[in-house]
Image 1 (tube, rainbow, N blue to C red):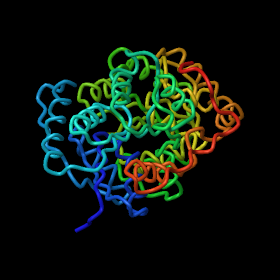
Image 2: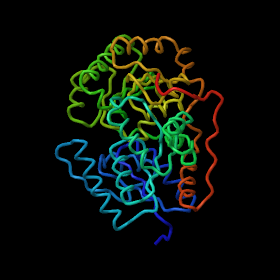
Image 3: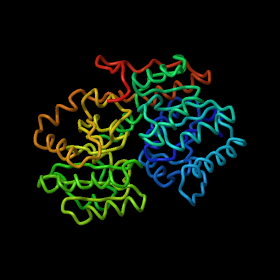
Image 4: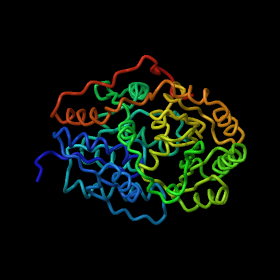
Length: 394
């Protein structure tokens, strides 16, 4: 049995699992702390699926019963389960990632047990509590109780300093999703999803579409789906892949608009290797996902962001993403401009990925060890020449 002190890495969603996996691997390689992957119970199947792509599995999975599906129910159930766990198996530190309900539950439960909280991907801000909802509030609340704030970019670090977080508690690490993406790139694994196995994208330009955020549901999603249908009608050389949100109402909405439409493939949520491969082969991405905004530049794929605001302003400044909202005509106009001009499309991502250099997980592992007095603090990620130094929105 290991005598190393445990650090619990808590994740409840696919993006959290993807971003925590490289950290667990880096911690094991460093050999200073024992990483324990803890699935919160928010989306347990998706977490297990995402970790499996990295050869990992949850060490602990919480049993969270849900009947109403509300955020309040989920938060209280997770806090209760975490508190019970940590009363008998107390880690040296807890790492929470990003801004989900799982992140908030993990941070609060750890804080109340006086366990140091490490916030991975800290400092993102939109400045609007309504968008993204409830994530903007979640990440601000986590910042109030965290002992160590690991910022993915210089702008995120500046947001924290502006909120009077001590500079000694903030480290620019880069985003671990870049580490994860680079780990998957080039593997070219066969598609696991049966619908994708049957498709051949080599003769077509692939457009990947994801619209998962709560604020996209309902009328905004109808407008997005209408834009997709119009693009399919306008361009006979494109194939659209749309992984649907698992929510039955959302899937029904997607199916009602696009099921049976030629050259559109609707899938269930995809395993990370499938999504990574699609991203690497895509001509264009239409997305409201924060993670995909961070991953796409690693493959030279521009992203049209289906939101009115984004906290990932670095993408906008670097030019690799553009805000288009959910207006049908605007989406069609902006997508058509890139589909009509390969030069314009390629120019968007010529500046590379502003989110990291593939070493974020190693910095995270060392910074956590340093917090616990087991290693010197790591050097921050080098800052590039064209870094954003002000502004939180575009």
